[in-house]
Image 1 (cartoon, rainbow, N blue to C red):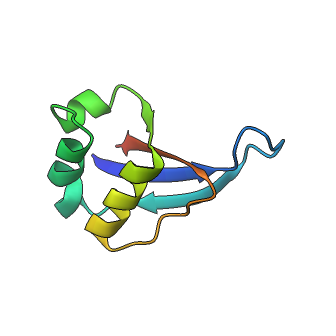
Image 2 (cartoon, rainbow, N blue to C red; image 1 turned 45 degrees about the vertical axis):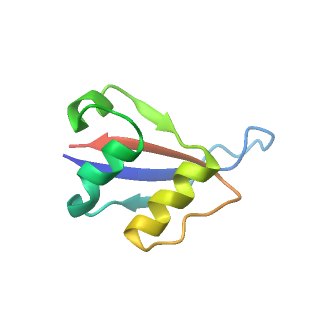
Length: 79
């Protein structure tokens, strides 16, 4: 299992298609799970989680990837 970050236009737009997707390297999994205050990756697998701007930017800094600021960003677990 691995973490996947996705981004969509804000709800004010009619376009609900995926605009951003990033499969996170598993080397960062434990750090991200802790950053988001989850107990485990299995706990996170129960849904998709909306990230605050601050969380998204912290994760981006951790993984050294720019995460778009103009999208609604989510994180979830992929099999």
